[in-house]
Image (cartoon, rainbow, N blue to C red; front, side, top):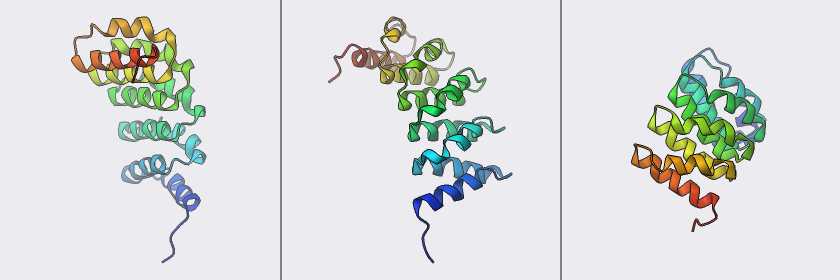
Length: 164
C-alpha cells in the first residue's frame, strides 16, 4: 500500500473535516494541526463555527500550530465565546500566531472567570510582544490564582526584555 504525501494527507483531512460524523471532524481537525498545512487555514477557520465545542477548540489549536495570520480575525471573535475551552484555545492560538494587533482583544480575558482562560491570555500577551499589555499584566500579578500570577510575571519579563 502506497503512502500519501503530505499534500495528499492534508487534502484527505480537509475533506474529512466536512463529514457529518463528529469523530471524523475531531480526527481531521487534530491531524491538520499536526500537518501544519497553510492550505487548511480556511477550513479550520470555518470549523471554529462547528456546533461541537471539541471541534472548535481543536480548530483553534490547529490554527495556532499553523501560525497563519489569516486566522487572527476569526480567533479574536472566538475570545467572547460562551465556552471556556474555545476562549482558552483561541487565546493560545493568537499567542502562537504572534500578531501584536490581537493584544487589545486579549486584555479582557485577564479578568475571565476561568483560571485557564486567564492563564492562557497572560501567556499570549507575553508572546505577542505588544507593550500595550504591560499595565494589565502588572495588574494580573495580583490575580487570585498562582498560575495566572506566574504566567503574568513571565509575560512581563518577556515584554520588558528581561527574560532569560
